[in-house]
Image (cartoon, rainbow, N blue to C red; front, side, top):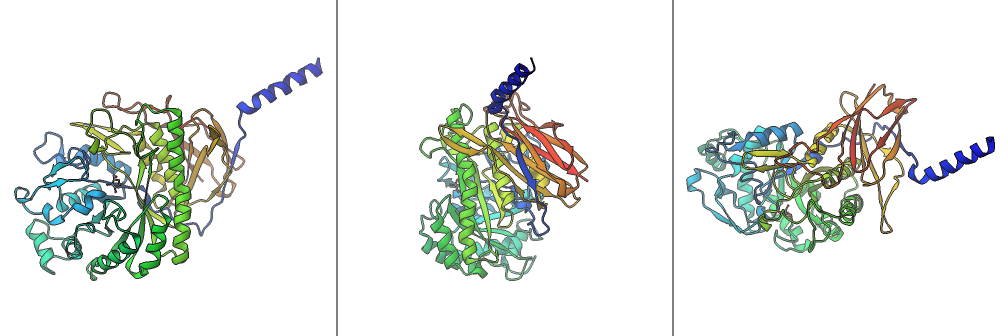
Length: 516
Ligand code: AHR
């Protein structure tokens, strides 16, 4: 009797083994020297593209949609709740065709241009510098102006800096600003010196762009008239390491504060696949592209370390996110796409990667804030919805300006067709009040993973959490069902003997808060 009971138990354990994956042991190692996670990692991007600005942010003062100086207030309130730290504008590719003086002064006098990159539509310049910078004040966010290098001049760039940042009455540009209704300067620290100079920003080679950069950056100065500017070089596309190498070698460090990097989670530029009805294989490939961010940052940073061991120059990932086919029936040039749990996975793992590289990655901008690519907000006339990506940004904003807590663990595998990805992604930080936050993502679409976090060095007494999950990876919010996906309270974490234990369901994101 006894023997048969033991055998039954053993065979049960054996059979149960593969189904019950091993517990993932994570060790949290607080370190006084660890970097602060810049809140600017949680930045956004707004281009004159499709319905991002017009219809998305800006509806005009005569709209029935509640607005302040034409900026829709539902969008402002939603983004304020995210505490968006910065907003990059006016492009993207649009930036290198944009002449800022077209967008100031009485609207009736502003010339129209053709938006050559995005849908070939008329740009009437009704949303310009004043509208954008006033909107940033409304949002409580830092503006990041991306200046025209591809088809602009150093003079135009220098004038834009004087117009926006120099004190009233100090020279002709601030006088022009005052004539246009704004006496005091705005606070504009972040300046992009062109965008994608290797492509839509002028198809330049890195050697040539380095020289062009040096020329533009020489005049891109506040001449002591503000708290200082951050000059950002147009960076590499994904794994173009040579771009970073040449720029780091050729641009003197006194002329550059940050270098950019763009990386999109796109399956194949020729065959991107649908935003909603994607297959398991497409999901896996998207996650592979998203997780590639880890390798990209490591390799670009290794090059930066070679030329800048003291880490004077920051890395800004100022465009990232999922990129799919546009929604059926919409303008292909408008890049309007839905946003599912797959996007929540991209956001969760990418933000964890940025947090964990907080020593060099000091800014990042998801593309784009409203109605374009991996948007946090979608609008349809007067309606507005929050996407799964929005909820991740809201859940993760506890990491803003908090001190990184390095984690170490070996992730279980997420396998498909003999390809392997890490299933679990995590990052942690301690905020100014001493609260500890741990964000955990399980990208495996089938397996739950048991996790045990050793937090004995943190002295935690209580834990609570939030979870974002759903039934299907393809689930998303719609204008008819705006709350299909939203975070809920997570009570599944147990704190005992210096260990936090929990189960992380398939394709879910959990953020835990521990207090002493
Ligand atoms: O975000 C859309 C476009 O992607 C941007 O305009 C460009 O910089 C990038 O190629």
